[in-house]
Length: 510
Ligand SMILES: [Zn+2]
Ligand SMILES: [Zn+2]
Image (tube, rainbow, N blue to C red; front, side, top):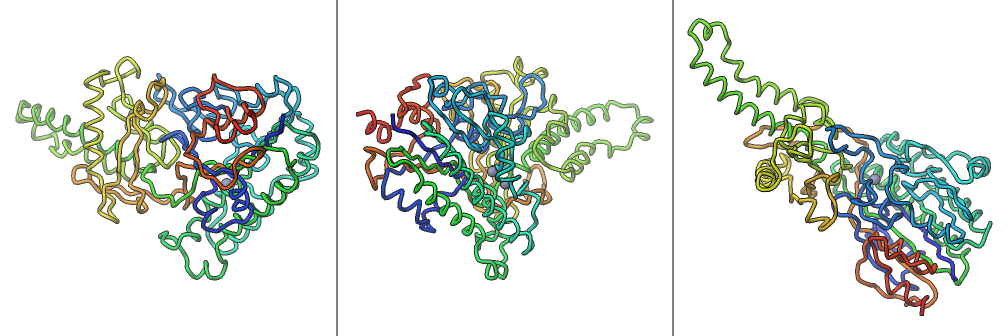
């Protein structure tokens, strides 16, 4: 059976790989088939790697964000790679006697392997809280000794001044080069049936260096760009050189899959304002109710009482609204204030690209107030109407481009634990200040160093025995990768959610 080698480039933008004509990628494209990959809609930022490595939808593997809402509690919990409900596809290969090497594949759980090795979070973007770990455990010490601790650390902790940018860029390139040596070393140790390694430097570079890459970004600094060039391009070119070195070292009979997991573009979204928008809507609704109650009570109250009670009390709701707008925003904040048990809908964590909303449903939430069925449908319509009143103060355009019900994104799948509604933002400009004729003005302070953020589609290039050269094929789903690799290695997985990609699998099985 011919071996499979997967080389991943985490969150590397397919458009930039093409625009910069990176030579190793271009050569590979000429030698093989190319396709774009579709990642789990609305949830892809946190679900892309779990879906790639388990071959299942987020409704099945259960992981789409670093923090997730816990049904039945109104609370959230931190997720780790050990929380998946489906094992990585390579475990079945290992059980069947295949030799697998899994190197820094993001968001991977570590399991004992009968025939292989695994490294997790030696140097990944947003490493799992479990830290650097390996199977066998002795491999971690060996890697530390030979390749030391990775040189970047958390990429969010660098600044935007000239020295910080240079330092981050140099360290990302250094990590790329060290990782290349590490991969060449591990590749040479055995004849692997599956060697799967991921470079995550593209991910850090995209989040942190987008502002200097993109001349239309509001934080772009033309003088610094002239002085430094495009540091993001430097990182991508280093990755391309690594790809060339690794390709040169691979056995000729290997099927090679090169994957850019999900894309990168400007960090234009309103997710950090969503909790405040929903809070303002809630407070406004509560105020409307409170005002009518107070007015009724007021007119019914004895004249003496009316003289001592300040009528301004009816503006309590407004005051709450002002306080809320000035409170530190962020995902999860709406889970604390206002009290979500009293809200009709509240924000739940889902990274930043898409907002996520849960409805407070009777019988599902402990203090549900929306009946399933017609009430639920009407509540979603009302939610859409209320959110549509918010416009971006800088552009005058509505900030919400579309709302999607989760069952339309994941038809036929269980979605009790998923958010009910996914928010597509108008991502044509940065969303810092929003204003609604009904709910007032909300602004958020700058709370992230990230100027780049994800795009939903990725890229897959496959080269190998029998695979056509220079062809583009129709887009695939990211869950197709696991059954494709399994089929090439002779262990079809009809139990997974994806399907083997004919153009890649068929040549080696015919
Ligand atoms: Zn990211
Ligand atoms: Zn990073």
